Amino acid sequence: METKPPIPADHSAYIGQVLMAMAECTSAGLSKFSGWMLVGYAAILGALLANLDSASKFLASGTLSRLALLFSVVVLLNLLQRYSAAVVASSAEVGKKVKEQPTPQNMDIVVFMTELEAATLWPARFMVRRSNRKLLAGDLASGGRLLSTFAQIEAWFVFAQVLVSVAAILVLACGLRG
Image 1: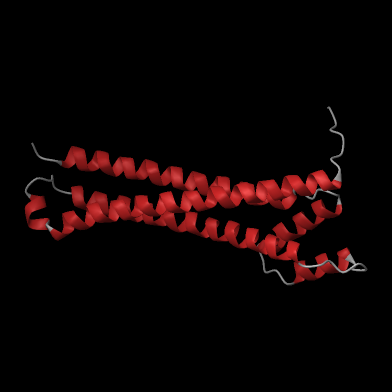
Image 2: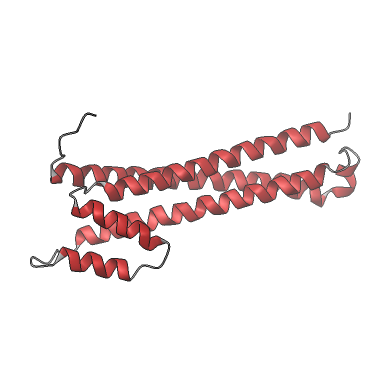
């Protein structure tokens, strides 16, 4: 197995900052797209329900209930995406604020990390512990990679939301009476 040469600390820190910025921008764009998709779906479903008497003449039995069920899935996926976006945005903001603060010269990094871990509840404590080990080993890009991972998970939630929304369009199209 081939071993990679160690990345200098300043390069690793810069890589982490770039990954954090990428995750933050990706997350913001995904949130906007996901929100508009949810609003569009809700508007269509709302219009159908507001005109139920007229719409039921053109829709096969059960079409509206299937659309409502798919809407529930879209809402759930949107909530998961928004939660992930909140993690990314708040973590990136903390990273910016900490970077602005002067670092005490004689700070014991192990004590700092121990206190940080102790202040974190389960299950996030495991992520903090793992990140602390990576940081102590000199991997200063690990925080950025973690946020990048969260942004990619968020992208999968949005992709699933797109798929369910397309399925809803197909359900609606197949449920139209000719």
